[in-house]
Length: 195
Image (cartoon, rainbow, N blue to C red; front, side):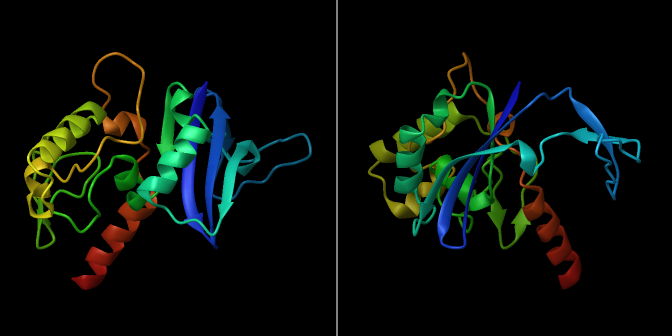
């Protein structure tokens, strides 16, 4: 079974959800889904059945913002790292917090790879990040004195990631975190709008 942990704050609360689904359970749908009482579906396009009816609300905390401390507490109390083979869904800010990285204005802001960004230009050919390498780089940064102006030398890793994985070997971030498509679409639209 597939498991997706969703994290988001908004409207004055921090929310954590869980979706459990069968990745092979595709249902026909289309741009406009029309369902009868027997769940007959008109279109013949397929997608994963992970809609809002499949979401389990794990936690809603009022007047709490996304922060390293708050996410560490929630992950520990809800034992979210014990949910085997789960995928994390959130926005880029949440991803950087969960990966214990500097914010998205840093030199190496991408949680998925170690690409450098300079004046809005992304360098190509970057190595993919792993949870273990982020932890190793953060430890090296701390051993060097943890000076704020040296974070970029350690790919902006500033602590042990909140998210862990019990499987053997390196855990690639791209295998553990869902691509935040909204941010990808907004970035593309903003780039087109500027040109």
